[in-house]
Image 1 (cartoon, helix red, strand yellow):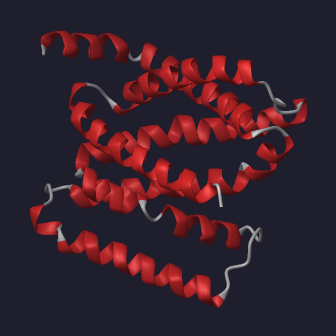
Image 2 (tube, helix red, strand yellow; image 1 turned 30 degrees about the vertical axis):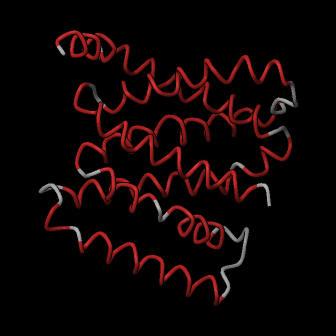
Length: 210
């Protein structure tokens, strides 16, 4: 039952992150914003992880942990930030709410967890509800909001893959060490790309101008 409160807190923080991202996305680009977010996150997590301790990923698991880190902390934040540039925070949150449904579908397709009739019915009803909610607010949305909605669903699909594929690696190490290792890989890749593209300099110039 501990996972339920954690999921609720995670959803609340995710909502705050959507609003904050919508506020700052105009001053930078999706890659640089992701680099700022996860470089700071990694800098905060690493000392805590080293202090708490725990099993780090085994040598044979590092390639998988690195690839999953690149997926979730490298590719996903770019998709996430790009989506916010096209749509509203509320619509993006609705599109991102497809994550549990996509996770169930991905787990079933990969034959990790069966998709029962009850789960299938729930998936269809939930997808219909999200689609109806997005369509209802279409008149008051930005002109290209549908693009942002679809981009966010693609981001949710990346998260669903991470949720399913990361479980065995987390089981063989620990949630905190696996998270820190993956975030380090994703943050380093984003920082490298942002640095090569002068994203940090552009963001600093934009911030100074405001």
